[in-house]
Length: 272
Image (cartoon, rainbow, N blue to C red):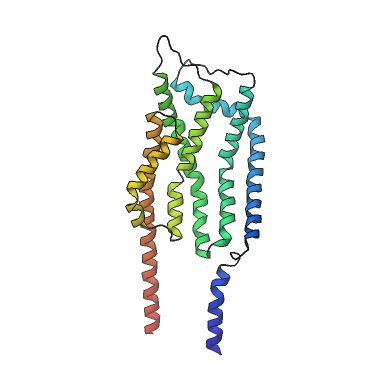
């Protein structure tokens, strides 16, 4: 009887650990809708808030342009262009400020389908995600964007002057900032996948050449057709990929050490 009870308890253990993951498809869709609604409401509320300070955000985004192209002014060629530019600036501010909330909603949607140790692995990355996002945005703001603007401005001649539309410049700046912020999530994602044993260091090493090609193609599509922006995105992404390999190797070593300690403990207890 005791053996039967132990077998029954062991069979229940994994079910308890995965409690909530066996929900039918309809419940998953309802949960997904709820997370999307929360994310959308967050963006809308933050967008309304950022629209109040749209001119301040606009001035902040204009600093790299003024430093790189001294004395140049931005223009708008349609009566409504500046208004819609402020709307886009407010949306940019909402996405920038709401990114941690969106990441948290993704975690809350995925967490019920994970094992307990996998859910714990997610938590540190909720902190790392906004840090890497800000790091990518800072690289654009202080390095890549000024260099790209200086490159474009250097092509002016006596007869050809660069007259930049306000919507075109801000569209470029906001696209690069968001793109770099998202691309800088690469080590977070790969390390997280390693935590739940979906990615291994050998796989990343073997896929290095394919990763380089993919990074170059992605950088060519997401950035303007100038070498500074493309190299400015591709080089950090490759360095982040190498950083991911180091991080995954550390995780595997720590996991192997924990497993060896556990086996030693079991061997000691069985000998006693």
